[in-house]
Figure 1 (tube, rainbow, N blue to C red):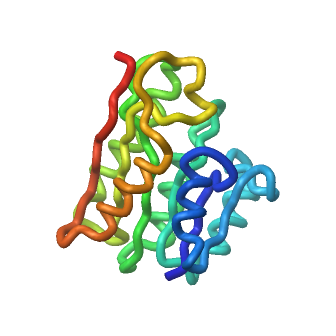
Figure 2: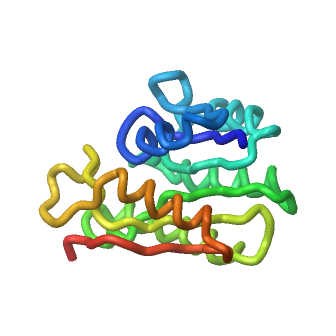
Length: 170
């Protein structure tokens, strides 16, 4: 299986990259020249996905809706193909209004594609112990717990579309 991950150099993306290291895995992050907020970089990512089986849409940019744009673009590229998109959303619902709106739009998109191909798995963890939420109070999931939930979703005997898990600081 060939897997591509955005934001693979820290947090959830880094844990997923390590988890899938026995497969053919490629990563796209700002540190290796891929900024999802730039159209040229998104197009370059898409060009690498023709022979990929699973795309993990993990990277988030605070300043635009590029994670949703990339999700939509990969879905359109792979429409009607037996591939998997894993979208890393969030159940975190307070704080930055933009962040909440962006994640809600991703959730709406994923829900609208539940019974189509490619198969989308929308993960909605609560607070995860990453740099993004280090300033927040509350019980946190480890990145390894997020990996375990994805492992469950991928290996279940039935198709899972959305999993909401963990706590928020609401």
